[in-house]
Image (cartoon, rainbow, N blue to C red; front, side, top):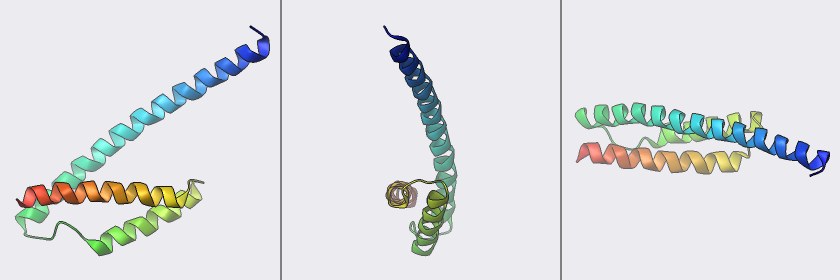
Amino acid sequence: MSDTVEKAQNLLKEHRQSIDRLDAMLVYTLAERFAHTKAVGKLKAIHELPASDPLREATQIERLEKLSAEADLDPEFAKKLLNFIIQEVIKQHKKHQS
């Protein structure tokens, strides 16, 4: 194996290790986020508040779009991701209301 290929493989390994570490951080961060949204869902159910808060959701999407632009992440991707998360949170909140 050439020295160039070996260097490329080492770099690839380092990138993949970073990706694996970041994936773990994403999972644990999402778990923490959902723990908080679960508590919010319980509070909403107890106080008979609606599962969805369109104003809050719109504000969060706008905020995330700005953050993603600052972070050089495609804002449209960030918006889709947050919309997906919001829909999961609303499902959770509706379960608490049942």
